Length: 288
Image (cartoon, rainbow, N blue to C red; front, side):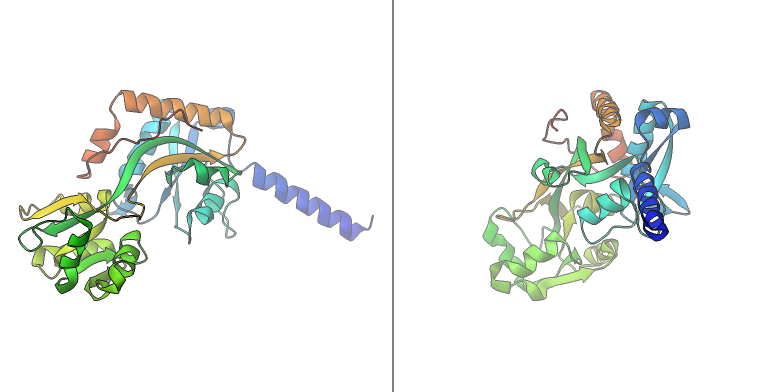
């Protein structure tokens, strides 16, 4: 074997060992005294920075989870990739090519067991809440949205959505494109709320947590929130957690901790602190 080949093999082995040891098992977490939890960057109300302080629903849940595990909390603030697969790779099983390591646990992952089967490098565990698409609108302008066809009322009005979102795709692709010119896109979805208050927008459409959080500090009795009737589009899903495949002991400990938090009704006040109604997951926490 040449020296060059031997060196290449040694480098490959070192990289493999490094990649597989970044996420700690439960014993290592206990010994270290801290669990590292991945939360998304700039994703209010789940996780965001305000006045230099990291806060949000997932930030508080991660802290409560660490307390149940008997350790302190370290946060890995994750910049969202193009899709969930990118995020799982960067946060859990490999790490970003720019460095920064991986986390022990990742929050706010859509809990879909069929999707989980296609990701054999991770374990999807502990569904802890439910997310859904809702619409908030001026009821004096749009009196009713009970029927699917009622969306056509927006042909003469503006509705704000986050760019590249499910809401955007639904409104621009359904109804033969009749609502395309009614859609106003926002890179920062929270910039839409002042336009809703002023009447420039008749409605905003997006995640229930975002919309309830965006509206909770300002009362307007004319604005109502309701689940969006979107036909065949996916309108709701559970949110769960992820650990690296092979880390079953940690997975079991996290699952037990989430069960305890659910039994203590700990999630409701965490969500309420950000003006959001807690929606319990539909999937049983025992599912694998």
